Image (cartoon, rainbow, N blue to C red; front, side, top):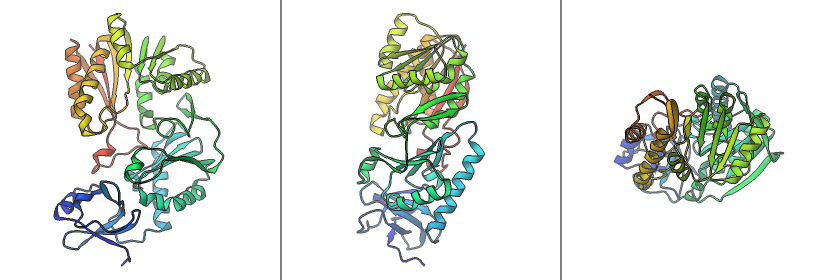
Amino acid sequence: MSQLPEVRLTAKGWRWQRTGHPWIYRDDLAAPPQLPGGELVRVLDHHGRFLGQAGYSAKSRIALRFLTFSDEAVDRVFWEERLAQAVAYRRRVVTDTDAYRLIYGEPDRFPGLVADHYAGHLALQVLHPAMERLLPEIIDLLTTGLSPRSITLRNDAEVRTLEGLPLEVATVWGELPPLVEVRQGGVRLLVDIQRAQKTGLFLDQRENHQAAAVYARGEALDCFAYQGSFALHLAPRCQRVTLVESSAAALARAQENAALNGLDNLEPVKDNVFNFLKKAVAEARRFDLIVLDPPAFAKSRRDRDAAVKGYHEINRRAFQLLNPGGVLVTCSCSYNLSEPDFLEIVRAAAADAHCQARLIERRGAARDHPGLLAMPESLYLKCLILEVL
């Protein structure tokens, strides 16, 4: 038996653990251990029976994140096997791109760790003190097993502050150029791994970019366009694609990406999307395809009512702007809004726009972002493709 600190759950905590969710909340501990955080602990139920091994956080409301439900050695071989499984899965499901998620936290059984691959360069986000302690070993495994060109820590996610971890961005292995060129299907993209949002690109939308391109034609509108990933996939099939984005820097990068791909039919517009859509309706503009890919409007349950209003507004305006036969690609990355909730919002928006629409596709995150069935938080992305009748 391993000589690790032990943490006992309450009866309520044990019932929660039986659902299979890999997190245990602080309120469900019988007595929080006197530990600084980041330790590997043995987890016991309220009767003292062994449940598994978890990383402990002394700061966060999420006190425990399970690593294993077995009393096994959590050593280098343990992590080598998990890395090999993550790599093998990506080799099965990732095609026609050199930019993808290599490790996706709990669904890959690396709780609190994200690793993204950009043309041989790795970007890591460490979101838990237990994984922070293991970071030197994880980096050694990645360099030994994958021989990356560089490894950069994108530890600037605000959630780290909830864990008592510092914010930092640093290249800790190899040499990282200012921009890395990657490929998604036939589209080339420039990625600033150190400064762009997320770790460089919104990789979870990669397959949805390609799905949207199937319906592209005529005049298209890409709202919350960021650096133009949706627009660049649409443009080869469209007469013109209008990109609306509030960030001038993101729009400038979208134009660089357009030039890289030899595209001259992208029209960038720096504006607030809500304002743009309102003006476009007033001007009776029309589009054949509209993409709505906003940031998370509901980052917590407290935001939910305002988020519902925001999603309803942009979807209602989009329906008003679509030609008959036009296609709406509408997304939500708000975990606090379920897919049934989002479907109802879009239904009500269509009704308020006096528009009949049929649902063509229901999509989620790309396959390199597998969802853990017992962890709804990992099933956050919703993407609906609808056609106006």
